[in-house]
Length: 99
Image (cartoon, rainbow, N blue to C red):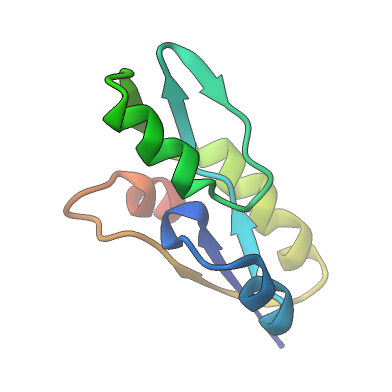
């Protein structure tokens, strides 16, 4: 069996995530220096509203440790993993997952 992982940069609707049993890894970002906690569902409206309002919005790649923890549980159960990530040309997340 295979488990499919992606992260919140995919901006998938929660209904789609649940319907297909996808595993979502939260992508880290901050607004005016305050880190935003995500639960797997990206709040694009709030994110882009903050940008339009002039807030300093920054993203950071998902750490190797967070990815490893997400994968580890499923690997220990014997599942194979497919990780669909943002392009390695614009994000370091793919390299973190490969590590």
